[in-house]
Length: 293
Length: 91
Image (cartoon, rainbow over all chains, first blue to last red):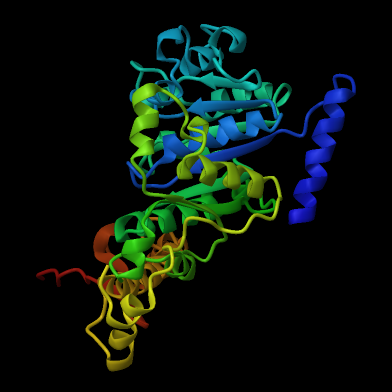
């Protein structure tokens, strides 16, 4: 897998230098089932990370009626047209896409704030995604919570999936449900093509609590969900800091969260990065014998 | 967990309880989802229609007089077929 990814990486770089050849765009859904686990935070940082690595990336907010990715990315005041406007032919893609303020390769397509979620038709979404594929290397789909139309449309066209999971029972169960839907209801599954490549992103991880037996460990979650872990984002106050200021967390340079997302993007692109932020710093010998923190 | 706790045993951590509960419930849910979203296998309506056709060849029964139900309990599946015969007409 590693080698394949690297190969594709090179290919994309070449088409950029070459003429207007069709790009081998990839559609990546960021999904979870459960709400509040970090899908939008992950979408914003993952898309930013891909763009910083030189890939032309667009991130689409599928949460119709509950637009939020624009706030997390800090471009809420520049939304004029949205995804549903484009589907309905009320605006062109180029009118609706918002260029990120700090990164030239990154664009956002905001969710509609007023229309209902039935506005997402399969034909409409497919048409927009196909059009984006002509122009972009990566199309990141930020899924809404739940398993209704919006979440289904976000994952339907996916080539790969980032399943965002918290080390907590309801989140793990909902992730399992979403994995089931990816395996049976996605376009790839329906057409009998090669299955959607699944990656787990564990967020809000707290190694201290894992060590004391109060929190599911990465290995526990891996045992249960049986998909590879792309990365672990530690629980951190920096995530709130990032959303307060409309800065994708990956741009808070020097923080653990930023480093974790940089690693996640690197591993996604096929690089071999050892896991970080999964263990507590070593305790002294006495503490190891008698316990206590 | 300290070494002493590991050596002499201690009550289960809440994380290990969580893992056990998840493994049990997910095994159950995955088994159910293998068929259909609403737990009815796709062949059930066909079975019902064909059974009804066969019975109707011999007995005059209503469309809704035949109930087919599939139940799953732990490691056992129970196919329940219920046919309501018409009451004897008074002569």
